[in-house]
Image 1 (cartoon, helix red, strand yellow):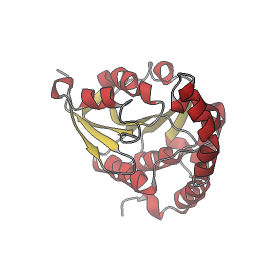
Image 2 (tube, helix red, strand yellow):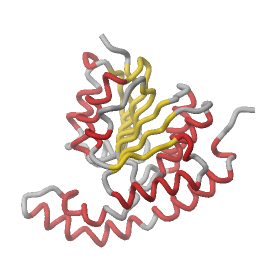
Image 3 (cartoon, rainbow, N blue to C red):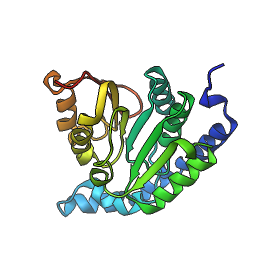
Image 4 (cartoon, helix red, strand yellow):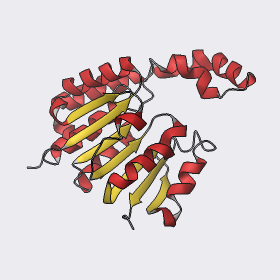
Length: 226
C-alpha cells in the first residue's frame, strides 16, 4: 500500500498542534492594526507596519490548501520541492511529507527570520521528515541561487514583492510540467498583479489560473524552456 501522510501519526499530531497554534495569529494581527495604519499614513505599506508583529506569527496555509499541496505533489511525483517563505513550517510539512511518500527526494524551504527557521526545523523533525527536508536561512535570492534542477514544484508564500524575482531565479531550474503555486492572490491583488500578469501571459512559458482556495492560490504549470 502506498504511503499517505494523513495516516502518519507523527505528521497528523504535528499539523494538529501547529494549526491550533496558528489560530492565535488573528489576535496578533488585530493588535497590530494601529501600526499598519500608522505606516500607511507615513507613506509606507500596511504590511511594513505589521512586520515587527509578523515575526512571531504563523500566517500559514489553510488545512484545505495544505492537502491540495500534498495531493498535487503526489500527482506529479514531485521529488524536489522549493518553498519561499517557510515560516514555522506548516506548509513545509505537507510538502516534505509528499516528497517522502513519493519515495524520497528533497524539500528545500527558505526563511529570513531565524526564530522561524529554527521552529520550522524542529517541527519538521517532530513530524519525522528531517531526512527529506532542509530550511535555508537568509535572503531567498541568495540561498536559492546555487540550487540545481530539476525542480518539480514551487510554493511562493513569502514577501509579495519577491514572488516574481524568486520565480525568475527558479525558472531555468524548473522541469517541464513543474507546478508553481503562489498564495495570497486576493489579499494582495494590487501588489501581486505583476506576478499574476507574468504567469498568465503564455509567452512566459506558463499556463496559469487563480484558484479560489483560501485567499487565492495562483496555480501555474511550467510548459518548458524554449
